[in-house]
Each structure stands twice: as C-alpha cells, then as structure tokens.
Image (tube, rainbow, N blue to C red; front, side, top):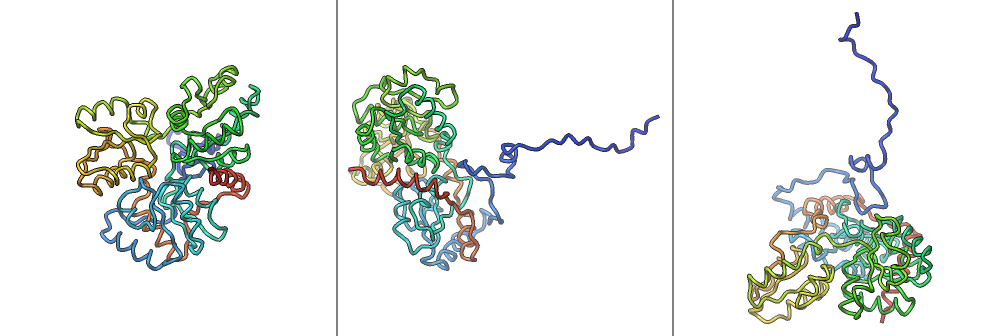
Length: 396
C-alpha cells in the first residue's frame, strides 16, 4: 500500500515567467514603458514629522549641484521645494538653462524627465523621484504601435503626404519617430502654430497621442470640420479605418487621451452653471470637444494661471484641469470664487506618486553621493527627438 504521507518530488514543468508577468510582479522593468517598478532603498515614513526639515537640509547640502523642477500638478508638500514651477516644456528648458547643476530632480512624470535629459548637457543627470510616476496618455502610444500605423498609412498610399505632430506629453520614442519622419512637437500653447507649419509641409497630419487636443485645435482654432478628422485606434486592424477614410482625412488623430481632463463632461458644465450663476467655465484643451465647445474660455495650464491672475475680484470660475493646481489657484485668489469643474475629486494619480517621502529619499541619496532613479535617453533616440523639439523651437 502506498504511503500517502511520503513527500513527493515536485514535477518540474520548466515554466518560465514571461517578461510581462515579471513586470506585473514588480520584478522587472520595461524600458519602453512609462511605468517603472524599482525603488531601491527604504523610503522614510510618511508620518515622519521631520520630513520637511530633512528635505530642506539635504537640498542645502547639495547647494548649486541640484536643481529641483516642480510641475504645476504636483502636491503642495513637494512644490514648496521646487526652484522653478511650470508646465513640462518650460521646466525642461529651465533645466537646460542651468548647466552648472549636476542633478536635475524632476518632480513630474517620466516623459517630462526624458525631455529634460534630451535638452540638458551630457554631464547633467536627470532624476525622477519615483520611477512609477508615468503618464497614461503617453502610455497610449508605443513605438511599435506608431510604426505599425505608419505602415498602414504607407499601404493606403498617403504616408508621403502625412506630417507627424506629437504632443509634448509623449515618450522619447514617439518624439524620435516624429523627428525621423520630418515632424514637430507641440505644446497645448502652440498646437495651432505647429499644425499651421505641418500643413505647409504636407497635406495631412498624424497627431499623437492626444486626440482631444488635436481635434480641438483643428476644429476650434483652424476652422476644420469634425468630418476632417478620423480616429486611429491602435488596437484595431488598420486602426479601425478604411484606406478611403484615411485618404479623405486631414487630421488623423491617435486614440489617446488624458485620464484627468477626459473625465470632464458636458454634464459637469451644465451642473456648475446651475449651481453657480454667473460662473465662467475655463478648461484645458485636452478636454473632450463637447466640453471645450461649451466652455467660456479654453487654454493651456499657463493660460489658466494668467487668466485667473488677471480676473477681477468677485468673479466666479469653474476650472477644468488637475485638482492640485485648481486648489492652489483658489488659495492664491481668495477674492475670487474658484471651483473644480467636476464634483468628483480627480488628481493625476501618477503625478501624485511624487510625494514628500520620495523627494526626501532622492535628495538624501544624492547628498550622500548615491545616484538614484536616473532617466537617460539613448543617443539615437535623443538625436531624432531633439530634431523634432528643435523644429518646435523654430516655429514662428
């Protein structure tokens, strides 16, 4: 009779975990992804009462060797340590203007740190306090998907007519693709100028990766119709479009969006107008087209800040952009009524991964001579991405 208590030798199934499985388990990193998974060392506790003093002491010890950039959407606890604040491109340019800084600590997200690395000197090191601080929009367009899209455009016989224009909120790989194919980068402030330039170079534009900014700029600012725009879905064969649809289109929009700005709806606008009589609705151009069409004003982050600075006392505003910035603006203008456009609290979840413990850990590590979380773009990618950025800088 078999002894059932006897330990049996396990069967060797020779099963090897896939790279995706390892990534999901937190044991590997995908260098092509906006998301990182590694954070070497121990983070200080969020409840540590000395965090502010520790950050201040480490920053003082580093002195001019460190330059801290803070994106507008960062938490207040982080933004207080920023040497400069701004949107992604402004911060990257600010970093490039500080060649004496050995370390550029970018309190933002992955694609922003990549842009800073592209624009700064070879001897400067760009650091992202949390490698998991990514951007869902940038993640929606991979190099492989965009290369496949270009093959679709080639098969449709229109690739030579198409000029790629990529939003600043894209990975270095996508910026490099844009540069290699004669295109340019744009921000939410200069999207119209970039598109005007692109249509001087070719007959059609492939706009990456934010469909809403592309559509709103084309229709609202350039007088195109919605029928001039088609939506390319990278998850469908041929982008879900026929060759004829591609040939008839002026704007080929990538199916990507901002997870924050995409939440605002026409109901949000109607509701706030009902709740606050006389309110002016001011939204970012990454919002859906129907939201932009229903708003009183539309503009970039910098535009929103300047508009509220210039607004008269007693005016009422509902702002459709990231909540950290809206709260900061409301606190800065107590003489005005400034509210978040949506009833639902909506921070940029990945931007919010940069918190005080991560910043303290980063600064203290650098102060001790330990380089952590460096963001480094390879030479070939940097070369072509820089071409696209330089075309943007040369725009009239």
